[in-house]
Amino acid sequence: MSAAPEPVFEAPWHAQVFAMTVHLNETGLFAWDQWAQRFGATLARHRVDRDLDGGEDYFVAWLETLEGFLAELSVADAAQVEKLRAAWEEAYLSTPHGAPVRLADGAVG
Amino acid sequence: MDMAGWLRQSAVMPHDHSDHDHPHSLLPPEPALRLKALETLLVRKGLVDPAAMDAIIDTYENRIGPRNGARVVAKAWVDPAFHAALMEDATAAVSELGYYGRQGEHMVAVENTAKVHNMVVCTLCSCYPWPLLGIPPGWYKSDAYRARAVREPRKVLADFGVILPQDTAVRVWDSTAEVRYLVIPQRPDGTEGLDEETLAALVTRDSMIGTGLVVSA
Image (cartoon, rainbow over all chains, first blue to last red):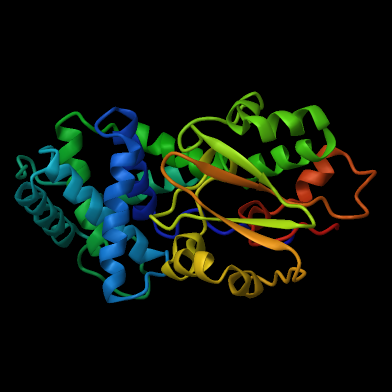
């Protein structure tokens, strides 16, 4: 066995979105079959437009499903998430290269 | 550094791009930014513990993977009592070896013979026996595999370099959120004297999904 093992996750955020979903299932926020049904539906919807290759686009579909499911469960309002996304973007853009990136105190949420 | 540590670092340290002189930190890709926003919100609400997320990533990066399934297959080859128990109730049999947990609540072992070759797919999404095989490879999650495995399994097998005799039947198992399958590949000829550990090293991930065969070293 000379070949190096394939990475389990291609990008850090793939691992993070996977872990967050497993974590929320473990803490009892939803059952796994509820998740699988919704994720399957997202994949089927995306497939109408193009073939998914099982890499980045798979996790994009995963994230979209999680965002929708958490909104459906009333734990993450889409507008609130968008405000935080904008706050993080601003934090990255205003932080000098090499310095830790943090949300400004009192950032929206 | 392991993935969990790397993630923790990458969460606070911008990426290093020495070929450009960036006045500010590099913006993460759009989905990563959206996920960060979601995580921030859920941490504030007390619904997400970042340390628990790190532990989950560490588990799937470093502790769970196809080596687990390979040990199960090798044991089934050499231990008739375990083989019988595995075919009877795979979930119970592998639990006794310490392989249980998420996505492994109901596992079924399907055994390849000269007459039948089994392969596994999840047409719904990507259900997979995590405790035995870890996280599925990209191709298992692709539309191409998920659609073609059922429709034209022999062609898919050929793409993987697996050519079966015409009189070997191909059986395709569709995983669900409830039932996950482990293929027990055929033990290759010429491995009669090998011990369990040596045999386990021959067993590939693909052979346990049914898209590969085990060959002797």
